[in-house]
Image 1 (cartoon, helix red, strand yellow):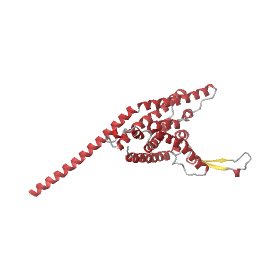
Image 2 (cartoon, rainbow, N blue to C red):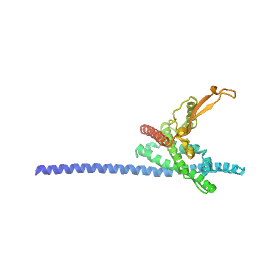
Image 3 (cartoon, rainbow, N blue to C red):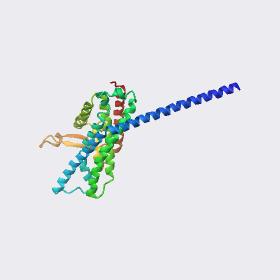
Image 4 (cartoon, rainbow, N blue to C red):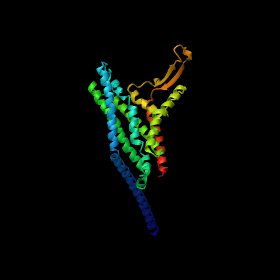
Length: 306
């Protein structure tokens, strides 16, 4: 009887220990979610002015594009036959708009704590991974709305002119939002490297506008035929190319370049250029790019001290 009683007591103790352990895990997970949720709510309030600024920026770029379209119309230029082509006319600055939005929301996401010395107040109260996750979610949602607002404005004008909106427009918007996610991860990484938000923003912008473009030209002139998945700016091409997506064997171009007016064909050079990534390439490539950038950002943020 004593053996049987001891066995029952041991089993009860083990069950109680497991129950306590599971309860601690549940409490820890709940607490973690509450911290992330409160961080998201705080970031929504904190970045409200940035959202308003980006909404105004989107509206400003749209109005400038609309003015150009109206001037051309008043000068007798016919509207495109298809609504797709008309909509695409407004996307000439979409890459630049996404860059502005990404810089505004994510250039300071990490650096601001060390620049303003607020880390001593924040870091002891919440783990850095939860803080970073909450901030990234909140800011990306605001950035998402800023890009979607621009597409909405163009969609309204397109509907007025053509009495309809092609469904492929919203697919292009999703590509723009996916590219925005890559830009967000890219600037988050730079924000974890530099001590000042301004330095992170300027360095990120220069990398996008100058370094990536120069490297792309070097690769094109040197005859490299490998698809440039390693350049973040390459993925932006699918936003506009999606309207008339080239066939798989037409995404790569060989461009002949003559040395001079009287040069023979044999004296020319051939340059190689990729027009756009495929849908699969854009999804996987941007996903990998974003994961790498966010992983680097998290590691550096985790190890960084005030």
